[in-house]
Length: 117
Length: 112
Image 1 (tube, each protein chain N blue to C red):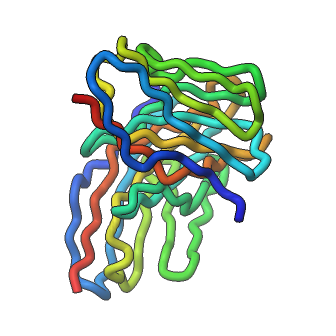
Image 2 (image 1 turned 45 degrees about the horizontal axis):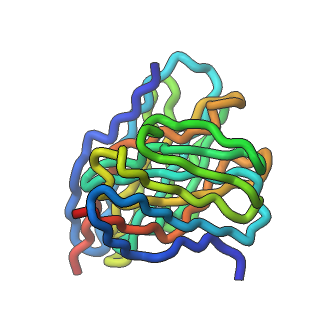
């Protein structure tokens, strides 16, 4: 069975602080994909990043960076110099590696990030 | 503009009535999905369809039905058999062979 855990329910920071959102994905699969989505107050989910289980190279895109460590099943997301517009719920969503019903994304419960001015 | 349209944004119904939520996409995506989101929770998959005239149940299909007669459209009917229909419903689509799913703006359904 697969299990995705976002232990942080809510995080509150002051603008310009760095913030890291944690995600742990427990699975026996050797191939899988990990996604992060952002859900602003408007409700629509916005795709942020996809990582493959066989690629542990960390990635930086502007103020966003991702740290994937397969040994600890963690896929963490860091926002550098946070801004008020970053306020949203962030979801970690793994997907199994092969076809059929494995197209399904399994969503964590999300982390509500509030960035205060 | 390409995208996924869900209408209406807010929907109110009386208990015991069936209601159909619309989802249309002009992205030429093959696969489409319906998710349900409850307050403070992640999304749960209701139904998905990888090609026209074919669809599969997700984790919480009971009380819901779908059809996929056209590539662009994947309507969801919430039947009176759904015990707790009040929720936020999100439709998504993805191109063939792609892993990313792209979401519509959602419909907030309230049943009283």
